[in-house]
Length: 292
Image 1 (spheres, rainbow, N blue to C red):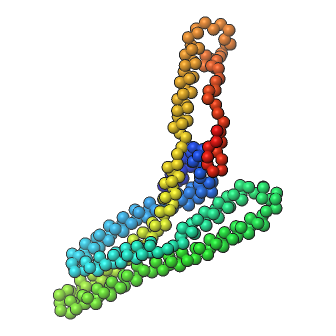
Image 2: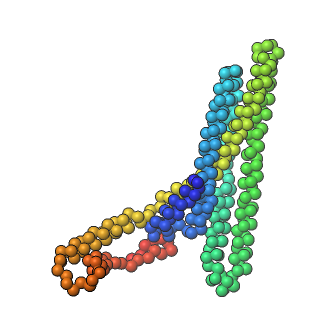
């Protein structure tokens, strides 16, 4: 429902764009925003709710762990700290995701342009050339997508290895406490099970954060499109002026109470003469500049 609401709102906003705003947004970009952009933003909202759920579960597990073993706070703080450092390093490293998204937008734009101007392309026998251009773009998109997919797979394994690592550290540090009867065996095994659950929850939260980072570009583009200027205020002003002029013209007709030559069945409002004031001609060039 959220995706449909975003699509309907963006489409309504686009229909009310001013001429300058409409000229600055290519149709392919608007189509991409209506399809993939709204879907990504809606999925990002659901991911945020899921992330809050995971944070609540982590808070319960952490409280139980610290209640039974306060010394384990170093392990519990070390796991999210390492994940945060890994995310920071990953964000600082150069990524080809922006180039891939630009190439994907170019592919969609090319497809939309060819579909829109197909008759012109067919009349000039340019279909083989369009096929070659589209094949080059898709091949470039494929080559840019492979490194990003490999990086995504490598990133997914990082939190999965943290769980066994921290469980091993916990066993190595606190197993002597079981032999000297400082900690019961049941409590020790329960703590290992809780540590596994915590590592699993951290891994899921890490994956959710990675998915959220992919939705930032969609949210950014939607924010730009939703804040484009519209001509609603201008048309509202024109409508108010037209209504006021109509009211004045109707009042002038109503003042004349003796109108014997008026045709039967014709209202006074229908006798108002049409008038156009301040009419000008203008257009917007390819660079978005308004010409009068």
